[in-house]
Length: 179
Image (cartoon, rainbow, N blue to C red; front, side):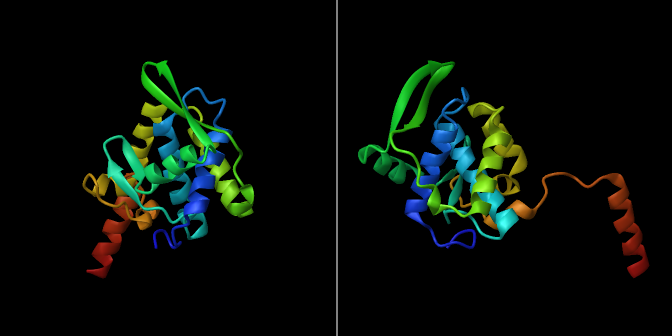
């Protein structure tokens, strides 16, 4: 169980389809960005709702977090002809997942859809490189584990920002009082 949720392979596949469908007009959308959308959706749901959407296990890879379950389930979607991959030149080689049949949105609660849609909008301005950079900067978990290791969902509640000087000074004063 990851993120307070038992892994749900069907829900994970529906999330891939939903994200690909909603990102169809996003010129920066490709395989890398899809992985970041999956990661941010699951981890933000854990932060907001206390549980992930899919229960997927995310690992640290060079280009950012990616679900261990992604490749086999992506292949299932391709073999079931529910999705296809378009290869297009755009800078470096770029692959985009497109949907043949829409996602079954009944797999998601209204709260989950709200989180997913917010993540889509938040990442819309970014291409693959930008979304990877964002995942490196915002994910404390990605920064504290080694390559190939699992990123704990609990790390989403830890801020990557340093506290401002006033907060540091406040706690130093408290420490002095507690002696």
